[in-house]
Length: 135
Image 1 (cartoon, rainbow, N blue to C red):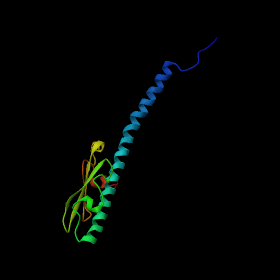
Image 2 (cartoon, rainbow, N blue to C red):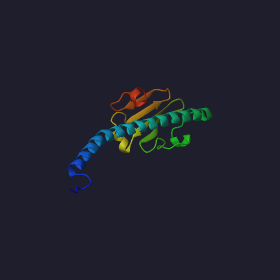
Image 3 (cartoon, helix red, strand yellow):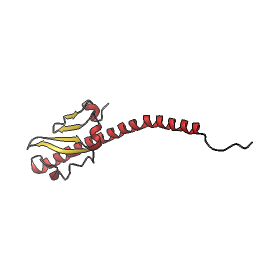
Image 4 (tube, one colour):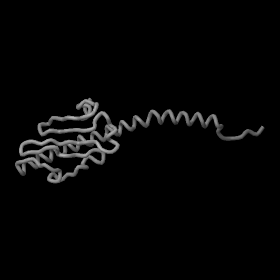
């Protein structure tokens, strides 16, 4: 008796179902992982700008009110957050990062703020310490 070689339709359907289940689990997990990674880029950029502000202050006895004076652009955090100096005076500043593009889907942490005093803030459903890389 000569039997045909290959896969049956049932076997192929079982494989497709298994792959679909794995994809349904893996893709959302991967997406969350990527959103968290972009958050760390934003917080790193804010800390970098704060360091640049302090260097600028030592040279000019005031804080910069635009990123250009610090040698940075609003895309210093990549294409997922827009960095800006929300306020600046001769004695104080606050830097913000606002989500843009696909990062706006991150409901936990959509915006960050860093004050000269070191106070950190965030908006979204996540706690500030979670958004800034804590617990």
